[in-house]
Image (cartoon, rainbow, N blue to C red):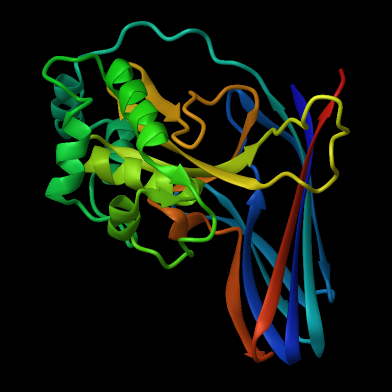
Amino acid sequence: MVYKITHRTTYKYVYPVSVGNHVACLKPRSFPHNRLIENSLVIHPTPVTLTERVDYFGNILCFFTVQELHKELIVQAESEVITDIAAAERESLPWEDSAVALAQDHTLEGLDAYQFQFESPRIRIRPEFAAYALQSFTPRRPMREALLDLTSRIHRDFRFDSKVTTVRTTTEEVFKKRRGVCQDFAHVQIACLRSINVAARYVSGYLRTYPPPGKARLIGADASHAWVSAYCKDLGWLDMDPTNNVAPSDGHVTLAWGRDYSDVSPLRGLILGGGSHTLNVEVDMEPIET
């Protein structure tokens, strides 16, 4: 499947901003099953500097500085990505064997995965997370089967509610409330996995949405999305989407990954002036016939 993705972010400030230094994480990664064809970034006002670099996790970041006095900042990323469905997975190792093997794996792949077993800025290892995970990760259960079961349980036990959490809400609060959004559910699942020594990372991207029957697709009505990727020693990284209770396929486009949301937020930075602001984000994910 080929997608044309437009991600437009607009900040409107009460007072003029004289200087803004920003970092954008808006260029999709390119790897098998998620191949980036092209990407462009249009910024208004026009930055005086704009540079790209690859971060520690392999994501492509754009650093830019705006020095023109402005009360509105618009950042629009346009990307074209080809996705396809990975081959059906074979049976996996028992989850305990995978976790133990990773701790002893000194290959580059193993060391890269091992770092995702530990706490990160937004995710803590807690007994309550472990207890919840172990209801799915029973003794000798294959890793993939256990992952699917945990994903299904989070989807069933937690309610999607965009009004009860913010980007600052802790994973512990979400776990108690049993409500939140895709970012929250991804954090909860990662916390559960890490609490039983399973390496897991946070994945940001886009999810194809479908209009109601008989309705036209609304331009700009799509949204950013987040899901989870867990490491299995014999199968590699396995993606799971607890918000929708699916294993991501060609309808998911990967943008970036890291320890948690703080590593991959689409846009962040520092400004001088501005006062309070309003934020509007529009995402359009258009399938292109080939």
